[in-house]
Image: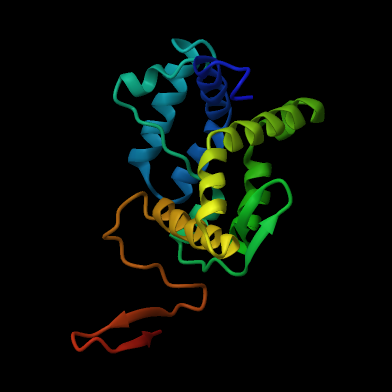
Amino acid sequence: YNFWVPQGVRNTVRNFLRNLRTPIVLANDIFQGNLDRAETTAARFFLNTTIGVGGLFDVATDEGWDYHNEDFGQTLGAHGFGEGAYLVLPVLGPSSARDGIGMIVDYFLDPLTYLAPWEARAGIAGTRAVDAYSRQYELLDDLKRDSIDYYARIRSLYRQNREHEINNGNPDEAPSPDITGQVETSDNQGTSGTVE
């Protein structure tokens, strides 16, 4: 894909796929109570669908409406649900029990689930997988070559990335309690405890 398809065309494909996913992102912005990000998502969808010719071109970023992604796994994390077991799903790659549930909910939030035939949805999912892998395969090859334990490295990077996404990139966010309602704390002497 990277060899045969020029970068500009690959970017156009990615823009189109992102635009198709906008209803899911918007719903999760609202579920998280983040109306500023919901406004950004709605503005991006309007601009990219109209001026951007159905989402083929990302004119919204040029206008100051930066892209962000949200999914129901992030929504659960933002509301304090722990990640549960780490999973590696066939074709989909690293995930967690929480994010697996999130994928199922996102499937039902997607209007294409109800409007598009299964062949079109399968084509979109396949194209999305190829696009995502094509943008990461060099990094994954480097990690595989340089890691003593590739599986553990991927798991660690996945968890860090998901925490970053749940906190919307804000490193100062307090850690979310897990579903049991417990959160780790530490006092000034460096000892830690659990608060219910």
